Amino acid sequence: MEDQLQPIHQKNAYAVVAITKHGVEIARKLQKAFQVVDPYYMSKFEKGDEKEKGIQLFEGSVRHLFPSLFPLYKGIIIIISLGAVVRMIAPLLKDKKTDPGIVVIDDKGEFAISVLSGHLGGANELAREVAASLGATPIITTASDVQKTIPVDLFGQRFGWKWDSPEKLTPVSASVVNEEHIAIVQESGETEWWIYDAPLPENIKIYDTIEKAIAAEPDAALVVTHRILTKEEGAILRNGVLFRPKNIILGIGCNRGTSADEIEEVIEETLAELQYSIKSVKGIATIALKKDEEGLLFLINKYGWDFSFYEPSELNGVDIENPSETVYKYTGAYGVSQPAAILASGAKQPLLPKKKSGNVTIAVALIPHGRNAK
Image (tube, rainbow, N blue to C red):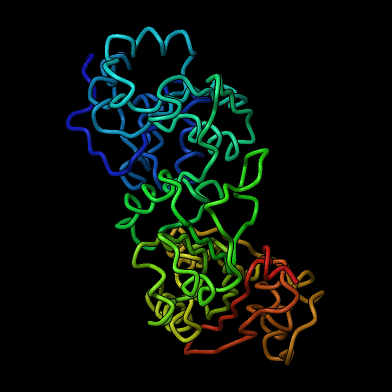
C-alpha cells in the first residue's frame, strides 16, 4: 500500500520524518526534547506506544507523505539522505515565502543541515536548535545568516521547557522579528539557551525581576519560571510567553499499594501551596523498594516524568532533618522523600523538606540552574 497515513492529524508546528531504525530513535528523541514536533515513521518500526505518544505511522514510499505535510507545517525535519530529500521535495517547491523550512539529519544524528527556507522559513534556527538537542553539528550554508535572534516557538525546547499556553507565540514572534523591545526574565531553568557566537541583539534585554521588566515597558516578553505568577506579575504576559523549565524534583515516599489518585492529589495540593507549576516537574525520586510501585509508575507514564530510585545506603549518606527510626525499621533508610529529592536534584537542601499527607510523604527540590545554582 503506497498511500500516506489517512488522515494526517497535525498537532504541532513542526514534523519529523524517519524511515530507518536509527532514524526512528532520533525522531523519538526529538519528540521528547521538543513539544512542537509531530513524528512520522514507517509502521514496520512500530513499538506499540505510538497512539499514546501522538506518533503517526505510514506505509509505502515516504515520497507520498510529503505533499500532505508541506502545506501543514512550518518546518519539516527529515532523517533521510540529503540527495533523496532534494529529489522528493523538488516537485513541491513553490516560493520561499510559503515553503516550509526543511532540515535534514543524517542517520547517525551527527549533522543537522538547513536545506530550504533558511531565513523566511526558519530552517536555520531550527537546524541550530535540533543540533543542540542532539549534540550534533548544525550546517548553515546561506551567505549571510542575518537573523541571529530567538525563535520564540523553539525557545528552550531542547531542555524540555513547556509553554503555559501558545496564544501569544505569534505576536511575540512578530515583535522579535521586527526588532522591537523584548524583555527576558529567567528565574529558573538552563541558562545556555543563546547558541550564537555573538552578543544578544540590542533590542533584547535581560531583566533580574518581572517587576523591573514591567517598569521598562517592553513590547513583548519571554518569562522563564516554575512559579505561578501573581496577578500583578501577570501583566508582563499581555504580550508575552510564559515558559516552564523542567527543574522540580518530587521526592516521594508512600505505603505499599497507595493509589495513583492519592499520590497525584498530594502532588497537586503541595505544588499549589508552593505556587509552583506542575509543568515544571522533571521527575519523581524515591527508594529502590518503590521502583515497582504501581501508583508511582502510573504517574511517571502519565506525565512523562523521569524516575530515580536509590538504595537505603545512598539515602543514608545524605544529611536530613529529623531522621526517622520508624522509617529505618521498615526500609533500612532514615528518610526517603527528602534525601531522594536532594540526590535527584543536586540541590543542597529541598525547598520543602518533608510533608506527610495520608499514605504519602513528599519533598520538593529545585534543580540548581543559573540564578538558583547556589
